[in-house]
Image 1 (cartoon, rainbow, N blue to C red):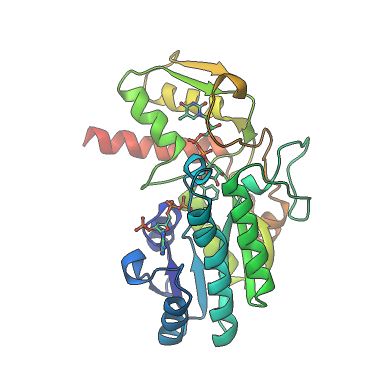
Image 2 (cartoon, helix red, strand yellow):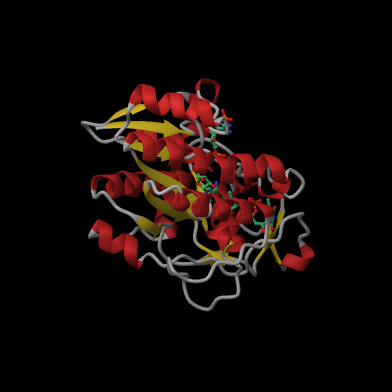
Length: 284
Ligand SMILES: NC(=O)C1=CN([C@@H]2O[C@H](COP(=O)(O)OP(=O)(O)OC[C@H]3O[C@@H](n4cnc5c(N)ncnc54)[C@H](OP(=O)(O)O)[C@@H]3O)[C@@H](O)[C@H]2O)C=CC1
Ligand SMILES: Cc1cn([C@H]2C[C@H](O)[C@@H](COP(=O)(O)OP(=O)(O)O[C@H]3O[C@@H](C)C(=O)[C@@H](O)[C@H]3O)O2)c(=O)[nH]c1=O
């Protein structure tokens, strides 16, 4: 099987490359090799490589910056999935596209299911939702994987930011009224490969299991760094940022678990594994 991986240098893309199964040939042209916002470049890349699957892990992920760069976010998060869908449809490729828990508005009391009503609060969330819709409207055979609070070996993520602050002995004020579940990119990558192997379609929610707040994540990171007590729990009103985040964006993993035929790891051991890895690397 051949796979065209777009966004192969990002948090998820790096994990996808690291976990690609035997028998899968992955082509990852990188941003310089393929600008996914360029419809004719996408068409040419798909025509040239004729992949069985196109995996789209490219996105505009700077949530606060998106508020003042809506056109850029729209090009990458909404136009690009439409280009991918059109090329996939023309060449008979299937698409695995990645989306976000930020398509939900946050007034919720139980984990969000795939068909629950969406209500994005931010430009990032709105453009990602538009991307889902444009891909679906393209008529391509596609699976849309909504994940949440992602972190991994590369790139900027909340756990990494907290780790850097903790190891420098810096205190952090962190919101304790936004609920979600962090996701280890290696777990997500393996689920994505499993969804490809199972030829999945539709929308699938995919985060590590359980739920917590950003403050809970920060406290766990600080404890692992040997610097407990430096996190102050605050409200969203006390931590002002340009983009509103959902108060509740826990994703229901029932569909994923039934497709995988196995339970997901809870967020705590998944985060601990990542932190142990960071610790080993900083000691080396
Ligand atoms: N990070 C998170 O917390 C979460 C992410 N998601 C979703 O998961 C997916 C993966 O996110 P993540 O791994 O964090 O993304 P990153 O921000 O880490 O990586 C984005 C990737 O997109 C590439 N890229 C950017 N612009 C273009 C372009 N014009 N053409 C081709 N490639 C481009 C980047 O390459 P380069 O750096 O060279 O420009 C990079 O490889 C996205 O769909 C995101 O919306 C969902 C929930 C949580
Ligand atoms: C760095 C920091 C953030 N925060 C808050 C701001 C925000 O509400 C929350 C998370 O902040 P960040 O900006 O690190 O993360 P954010 O950019 O909101 O992360 C999101 O990224 C996109 C791509 C997604 O799709 C989401 O699932 C989610 O992972 O924590 C603090 O309270 N204190 C801090 O020191």
